[in-house]
Length: 169
Image (tube, rainbow, N blue to C red; front, top):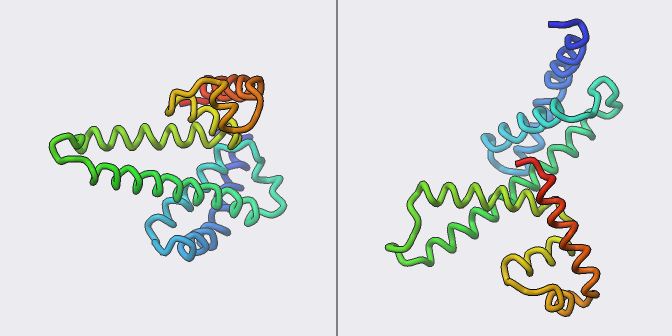
């Protein structure tokens, strides 16, 4: 290993050692589940490792970890809500037309990926995009429903398409 990498690894190790237990306890209190809290705690440190934030520059590491942890917690509950809604919809289907477990898993993964993709859009842009894609509405109809100009909808849609093209899958 190069000398330039060593301080970062040592700093990350120190950050993990000093704050992992605290973060996991905080998550466990919020989630009521030690397994999920442990997963999210580790995910938080993975995010910190892959972020552009320099660990040595952190003045308030717990505040930073808490911010990242809260975002992951929010994503966790969004995914769980999406999964619950999907499973409830499946329960309403006749058994003979229900997808296989493999198909369910693939559909759920796709729904989660789409949810994450759309989560990066501003709410009005996301709403316009969904009205177009899910309900098949034209720009004029979307503009009327959202009480904005058709030009605004065109701008929203361009923003949504650009976002979808630029997101790394």
